[in-house]
Image (cartoon, rainbow, N blue to C red; front, side, top):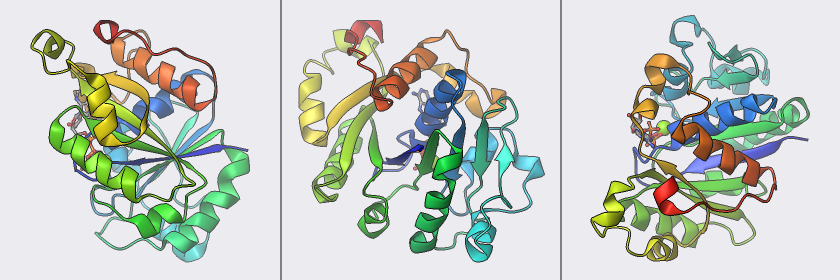
Length: 241
Ligand SMILES: Nc1ncnc2c1ncn2[C@@H]1O[C@H](COP(=O)(O)OP(=O)(O)OP(=O)(O)O)[C@@H](O)[C@H]1O
Ligand SMILES: [Mg+2]
């Protein structure tokens, strides 16, 4: 039975799509079979990240309308174990009731299913998946942290919610910005599951459609996917991220 993981943030551009793609790659590198469902109607970032832009004919709206999850399933360009259901092409609302049924029907076929939510806050939609793991992806700045706090304080109390601090810049430690990372975690209001470095390689993900397995970003994603998979992986010192 697969693990369902939702990436959310409140504020836009914090790195939800990058983080869920990096985690998908880390999971695939461990031999896992992974499905990513892009919920960002109209934008379809995951197609670009995984290099399938040109081949997409069907999307999530076809899957939901026909209750046919296989129709809009595309294999990532560089990974045999990663599959993507692209977001609806136009900026339309998603029927989360029906999406829930589709996700349930797919759980036996994948080790990990990622739901990449758009920016904004939609507690009704989150509630349909409250038995999933919610990863609040916050960039390191104070505005993202505040938006993360809005989600963590409003989400159902029986939901497993964890924080990912993304775009962490270790040069900012000496500048005094991260004097107290615990303060960031407190304001975000969720337990930390991992920190992802600011890394130019991730900026290039949408061009390369892959991540170097031994780089800093890959190592961070590997630690987080192992924690998601209930392995005991200690947090590393900030200056080593
Ligand atoms: N850790 C990182 N290091 C460097 N660049 C990053 C990192 N994380 C994300 N980015 C870059 O930041 C931009 C926004 O990332 P992304 O699209 O993943 O954010 P998002 O939260 O999914 O955005 P949206 O709210 O529009 O869905 C992209 O250009 C991406 O390459
Ligand atoms: Mg996104």
